Image 1 (tube, rainbow, N blue to C red):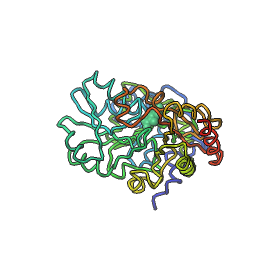
Image 2 (image 1 turned 60 degrees about the vertical axis):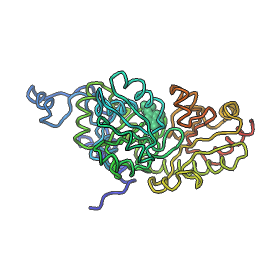
Image 3 (image 1 turned 30 degrees about the vertical axis):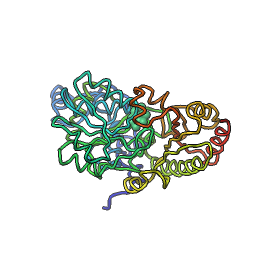
Image 4 (image 1 turned 180 degrees about the vertical axis):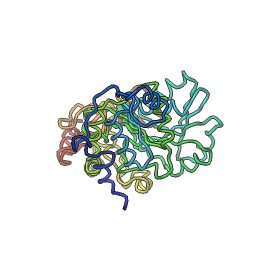
Length: 392
Ligand SMILES: Cc1ncc(COP(=O)(O)O)c(C=O)c1O
């Protein structure tokens, strides 16, 4: 049989009518533990000799449905769910790296990922080094004997800078170094790095996977061998598991992922064009604009341009603050990928923890504004921004 299309997988993968009751929606298995028939079965499950559940920190049937669905959508062998994106990122990196190791990263990272790599990991003897991954020579120069991971965020939060995945993966393969891609901004509907040869995908499922701003979650997709490895070590022993109800909300969100993301992208394109033409706007960063410096790479690597953009208004921080304080429809809030449009100021909010010098080297200027374009009518979002820009 031909492989089902993306929309079909989003609806069906991982989910089957409940064999006991016929319930179409996957039941929420709200249980902490699972009863063994006898001591021998318990021992066999702990030894990994028998398939089956043990304790919900390590696995739960509602969570399994989510893990199977995300693996199918990303085109990977297996998935693993966590209570937040940061729980997923930390569990994977603690699994891949140990004291004395070195991690190479893309230059711009989400604030807490930056904090994990540059504040937490050094305490355990792991060093992270940012480099312009699009500069092949610079990447080759920075790789060392002890480099255990190349960690990529593309598009980067919040500057929308892209990394050429195929090029990075080629170099990584020559050195046998796993590539981890944070695919939060695109979702598997618009970008599938595993198809290009990446080894792991991580998601803040809080964003487009949920889509409704009502749950936190994190996901990893990779090979069966390594996903089992993470489950049995840094998921089990650190304990960043997701709860069954949160997993159920993410399952529900995933069913409509492609239609939502398609519309987010269309709305963002209209908003980006409007901002680009506005005299008070200095710069718009959106990969779908033909004058975006990496427009050609965006078209090649992604199946669309997504719902997030960043922009800078004339007049710097004060003017930017005025715009944020003047919006009426968009909410002033961090997070992204929700049905509601969300506007925020990275320098004082999501990326405030990054030292000033590092932040400026990432081009996260004091005046930069990030907008996650929601699913409202695009004319209404544009009218809101128009009246806010008039206040400058
Ligand atoms: C690109 C990216 N990665 C990871 C995270 C962390 O995810 P969470 O907030 O679900 O822990 C975020 C959160 O904003 C993000 O934007």
